Length: 65
Image 1 (cartoon, rainbow, N blue to C red):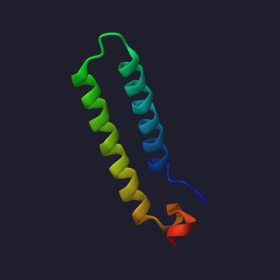
Image 2: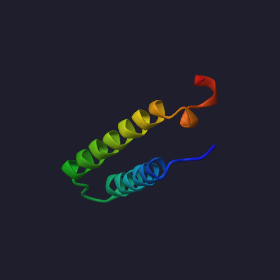
Image 3: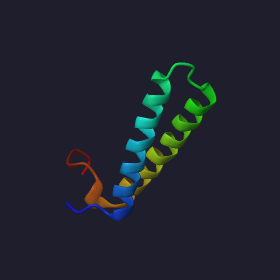
Image 4: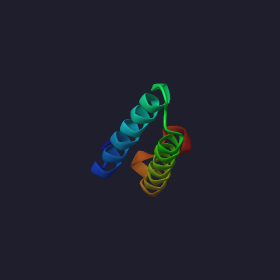
């Protein structure tokens, strides 16, 4: 299975946002607005990943075929 560069880039971005969200949540005096923004960005990236996956048959999980 080959991954498109866009798919790989979006998965990396999702992982970075997840790490940033985790760091912010564990920080003393965490900013709730920053947490909300990180969660929103993560959701947007996830939606793009799903849309990309649905468009490309090579990226669909084996059970969904």
